[in-house]
Amino acid sequence: MPYERYVSEQPRPPTPPVPRWRERLGQYWKLVRGDRPIGVLLLLWPTWWGLWLAAEGFPPWHLFAIFTAGVWLTRSAGCVINDYADRWLDPQVERTKGRPLATGAVSGREALALFAVLMLAAFALVLLTNRLTVYLSVVGVFLASSYPYLKRHTYLPQVYLGVAFGWAIPMAFAAVQGTVPPIAWLLFLANVLWATAYDTWYAMVDREDDLAAGAKSTAILFGEADLIALAVLYTGFLAALALLGLRAGLGGWYYAGLAVAALLVLWQFRHARDRSRQRCFEAFLHNNWVGMAVFAGLAFDLLLRA
Image (cartoon, rainbow, N blue to C red; front, top):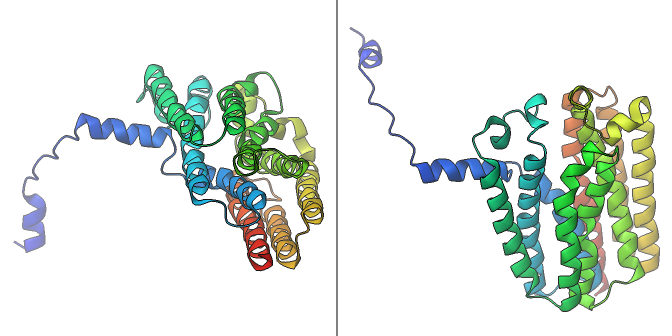
């Protein structure tokens, strides 16, 4: 008898059961999207834009650590409360029906407890900054907690996501400068436009399922004019960043970063012009490179100016 056949016919030892604590941690890791870092990156880039611009270069190390860790904690908490709010919707959507709350692998009570722990940890970090930043963080908690419920009542949850994702910008200025100048709000506006645009790509992936389930989004609102609306949003985003460069006295490296970001945006339109689910999702993911290009241009410009 060949050795391979002999081995294949031997009884295999039973697989040892996974310890319950490890199984729970695995479910929680999936719930906070630990295996999908794109959300962290899309929140991290505007946070770093704000920190670098407020500090006119590399920010103080303790603030860099606080805000970078805070991004992960708040994004994770946002994923948890989003899935808790969408537990009625996610089982009906192809892309989300396997999430832990949608399958029942994690209970609603567990999700709320995890959300509370993550938000408390993030708030503890904010307490290491100044009073204005702490006050602004209270608004941030409200934004993160209320965003998931908007898709039942308005077609503009993507705009609200932009506000929630961009709230780290005024917080960064408050932490570094002790105030929130007009230039911070201009950067905040740019991020709202950008987040609305990339989350519309994301909403286009689920448009048919959302329509069937009765959920709302900008993808549904824009309908056949979705690509035109996206072009307006991205143009506004890049124009706001160009105006920011003029107000902040930024130079060639910054505008080179904007030029690269514009080329990356054009690629998204070419890639997803057929509106297929897969290509819209890939266009959404591609915004990580847009955020990186803007940050690289800003950071190099400030470094060489110092």
